[in-house]
Length: 155
Length: 155
Length: 155
Length: 155
View 1 (tube, rainbow over the protein chains, first blue to last red):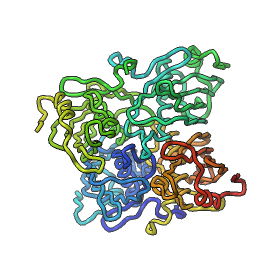
View 2 (view 1 turned 135 degrees about the horizontal axis):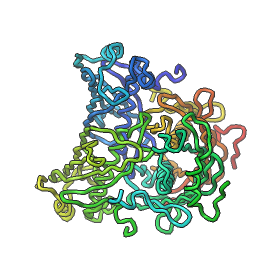
View 3 (view 1 turned 90 degrees about the horizontal axis):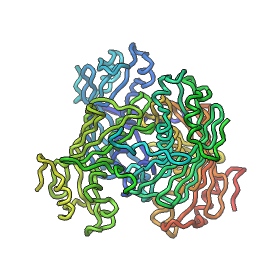
């Protein structure tokens, strides 16, 4: 998509950053962003981190790398520090925390300017079309590991 | 689901009625229900109308009635009259307007008490797994037609 | 809402149970329920637990109990065990875990029949219209505490 | 937001274009984009068209241009032609169709490459904080009219 070079965010030292605009759909009647909206923002960040690294949902699903694979969220911890509001531009940052067999752990934060709004740790499993956990194919594991930060644990 | 007898709403003279509660997720920062939320409420109404008539998405998808089928929304007209708010109980009413070959037309309205909030006309196509329009199997067309109102046009 | 007696679920020994139907809007292209949808289901469960106990968002916001108050989610831990699918009927169970000053902790689980699908622990803060933490008014704290389970910690 | 120059799309001859990525959250179990998701995409397009023209929801709500104002969707017609899928990049185009007193009409289309996927006509009303229709302040009407296309009707 050369016309919109930043649409999938950018890789940066130790991870990935994605800008997300707050629209009507993300807010609730209390005037701030609905807490469930951040879960969607984090998912967009993870997806575009993988996209920038060269791992695509459609290729995984079509079995381009062997058996059909998918990522499934296994657990997630969220800390809500400050609220975002309509029209805000948020930055979703995603870092690989560890990569062990079928488990990928990621650290994610959402900032508005210098303010930390929400942080998350997310554990994602690599699964087959039948839902069984499986190792990430080595070619993809290498792509991910290549964007690990100093603190990333890879086995 | 005998434990929750009203979960899929009720068939009534000439159609179906489904109660829908307004939650945080449905509102936006202007303090009222986000206009896109009504599109979801109407879809719930159509789905539960079909469910009460005896037509299930999963059976259609699994080809219980011949080839695998699905419903796809082709067009929709929405009129927003009055806003709904958090905690409101809304009634989504769905009536079959016409049933012709691969096309099903439905009239839908959302009320809060006596107030009409939103109305919609929706055209849904019956499609095969390959996305081609196809006639609704006679056994299902009969089920639907059996709940037509006096103004319904069936061919 | 005498016409739809179960719309806000039911209080039960040690907490509250709410039935939730899975619709199109809750699923994603992998064929199962989108992980973010459970966050919405849990919020519906908490809201209807409060409603059944006699605590309403609108009354809080309007200052019926003194200053205008609201609940804000501070942290949330989610464990995804098994996937839900279209047409499923899920039961969202909510129990008060602890009630201390401005903090309310809740344990929540989602089952489909006997299967545990997702569990969550949620910390909610009582805040003023200015966003500052404040104690829940005693009359409301008593309502909540009255539905505590044996393991609930109340200070 | 100089760091992400395209985040709000671009003004173009006769209107505005916004790129939108399809994420998990936008799809449903049938494997394609949920029809209600396009309603959110169109709203993003309208909001960013107004933003690029120099009209901001927050300024309107705060009464920067006189009384506090908001836009409310009054009616919407949607035609679904072809489905979008996960990972697709869609272009949402928004054109002013007419501007008459309190009513703004917009034509919107969503393309994927050369394919037209969905089209919409949307009527939006300018309302006061009390929900009454009101004329758009002249300074804002001029901003909008300045980006009208040849077919736009302005009174």
